[in-house]
Length: 209
Image 1 (cartoon, helix red, strand yellow):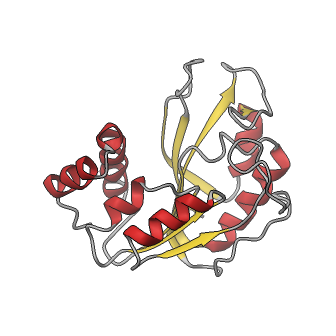
Image 2 (cartoon, rainbow, N blue to C red; image 1 turned 135 degrees about the vertical axis):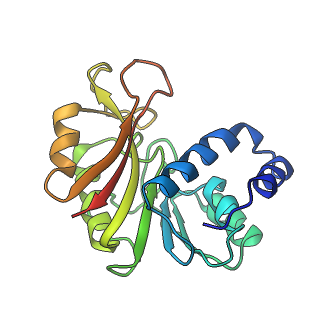
């Protein structure tokens, strides 16, 4: 990737996102180390917000697709980075879109198969509420990732946390998580998620088999 870190710092400061800079740089370094993202690649960011689109904008060769159930996130992104493809769906989520009318258990993402070199799910599966929704989303992710592509994903797991279906902090068992990704995703990096800390998520980078 051709992302200048000084320029990245400036962009995040200008957007009032300096507190998110370290986590973004950490992810970028890992994606580079494990060859998960290269110039010219397509990134699909599910539950996008603004953080990664700001970074991707510094490499003009990156094709970025941002998806969110929060309309204002998509509208803001499209205004700031009109060169990218922004998608919104009125999916029901008790935390982020409680009035949504689309059932997340059967939703199909409007993204073509074999599109993404990297799918980003940062703090997404920590809010999906049920295992059925997680299974559906992962099925869709498997469909949209190119062979050999990568997935960046995070979870709250039990143990050490208690299993929970609350949208503000969804927790699956470690066995359930492993079963969800087993057989199709080879993990190249995992870290954290071993405490009950509010933000301590089990972070994974995997490659599609």
